[in-house]
Image 1 (cartoon, one colour):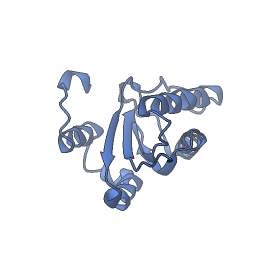
Image 2 (cartoon, one colour):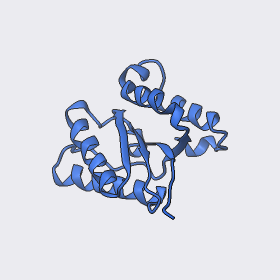
Image 3 (tube, helix red, strand yellow):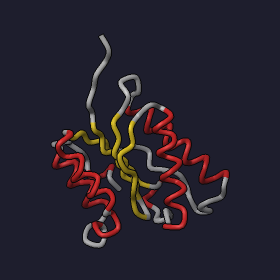
Image 4 (cartoon, helix red, strand yellow):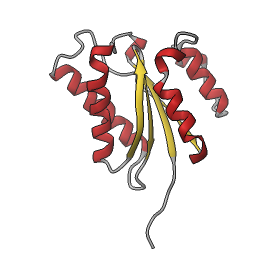
Length: 148
């Protein structure tokens, strides 16, 4: 018997202190690198996008990969890329934690569109408002003081 899973994660995290440094000229390179890290771990990447201060990743994890180890590897790898290639001189790193939200396969296409349209979406709502909305939507208790 093999292992079969279907877990769709939307992973969301910001730059350290929500610093607006992920400017368009660098995003494609960074997001492509993220996708490469995820794919090397035998996980499937549906879409990666974000704006100046945060990133959204929609992925399905391979059963042998833990969510925490994948996020750590993506953050560490992209941190090294940004610093080694001097892509963003004032990049201080990524926030300490992250949000990870699960969805059914039926919601996948809507999520892909939502993530692809981050620029438009954030003309109306801040990252903080979006993140709090995700926490509420998934019934995840939180403390305001940890959201910055």
